[in-house]
Image (cartoon, rainbow, N blue to C red; front, side, top):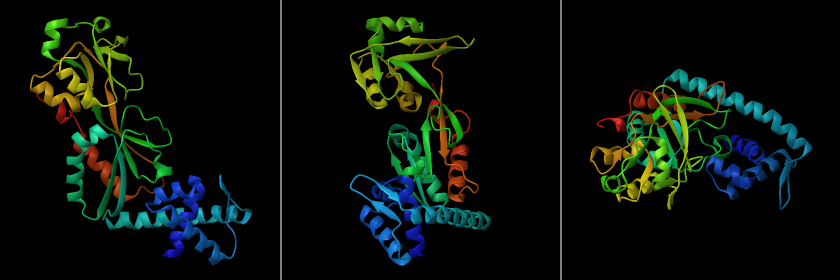
Length: 303
């Protein structure tokens, strides 16, 4: 199996463009990656990679070896996946990336239940608002909110994610309650820098009318929980995903605004790279998530 590890690392290094990126992709260190490549070159008796201080590139024989061994590894992985699928036993390490706030508030309980149901799968989950490259960084799947930007990935829609304009009763008593999106121009708004266009809030009415409203305010956070806390404290109107705001709305600490003008919902998606044979562990996770999030999300209940 050590030769197989060497070949996998060789392909990963050329695909990722560096030892460090390949090591992250395969879950090891840069030093170990370098040792595997050196061992492969020693076993074959040829130099496969030209190394400089700034870049690396395959030698002529390295390029020929890469093209052949990559095909063989793909065939090996397809065979391995088909056998595992036939056995009906999802297993192995599964690397998943997901947004920080959604992961902490909603995804963890689902993943713990999934881990209980599939004891042979080792979950390795990275909660981060950074949009990672699944292939380059070695992730099997991703959970993302909003329209997927990478068309090369397969996307399974799990549910809608509502984003709600809201404010505390104390703020509304002092500044008045907006009844139309255009009223926000005269209000203090709390800006969430995580959104693609944080200074423009989109609205949609039941008859299909849409509006893009410019907003402004002196508080700006790159975190939904922080925006909600500022709204609860009476600093203004915030634009917060309902999976964060639900408990606060149910408790009456903030009130949702302009129900006739619901902001266009975002989609919650499970993304994974395409392939002839989807690994059974990934299929099991995606199917489990589809089942758990089907229908009206639990965080929208009760208000």
